[in-house]
Length: 386
Image 1 (tube, rainbow, N blue to C red):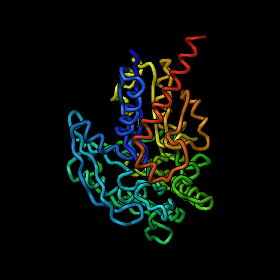
Image 2 (image 1 turned 90 degrees about the horizontal axis):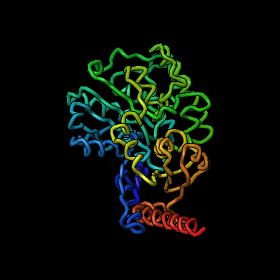
Image 3 (image 1 turned 60 degrees about the vertical axis):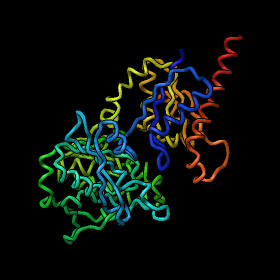
């Protein structure tokens, strides 16, 4: 009996990981009805993670109105986990400062703020949480976590002793981190920030250069953001004694990782260690004949610590073939081969409006999966006849 392992993450601003897995499973059933299909929807701390964690642990999703990335109130949430994780709150950066919360005409990561993330942390403290896990990913910000810290009582001051404004670019004028007003409850909780360890705060591979353009920054804005993150890194080093410039994970979610670690003393942990280890992924890979993974886009960033590359890396340790499906194929997609992905394919067959693609995404996924498997079956038949 042929065994498939379906281990995708979500499609940003479109489908969560469970919906992606369901679409792929439907496509498999069309071609190989009797196959054994094991689905492992994976989260990376980004969009949709709080909902999935609340559901999978028997916890609850707590609604909160917070300051959104462009300064307007947004309806957000955090998760109070259940079961063996009771007492832990999960705060999703994307739920308060995600790219999906930034209107397309206002996508300037030099001005968007993580303030809502700090407000979610404060709301989690109000519940008496003993541990807070902050999940990074899918953010629309690049402010080094300064906004989140300001919401928790920290002041970021310029030469004149005035508070700098929201967003990343104003951090170029920052000269002092004043944590005297920090919420005292933070000293009583264990805080972990789940990060992509390949994201660093500053330098040539810093978050401004790598992710700024994806969040709407022009080349000139990227340069200003890079200077701001350099300045912020210097302040964090002065405040904490730790150099965060190239610390693995410090650049997660536009530098939220570095900000929370440098001022709150939060621990940075690989998001794969935080989220994947509990899924028995390696054991389930061992039983599979073919692995299907997926994400919204396959491009140069896929090899930089994204879910498909981690699935492929683990699959290759066990000699399993891996196919990745995606909504779009972008520049640098071929670098994903180096991570262990054997083949990738987009789910679109021609030009289509974004809104139509999002609405039809489940069926597009199923169709693309079926097409891919039919091609594999042709190859298998030819090989048998040779």
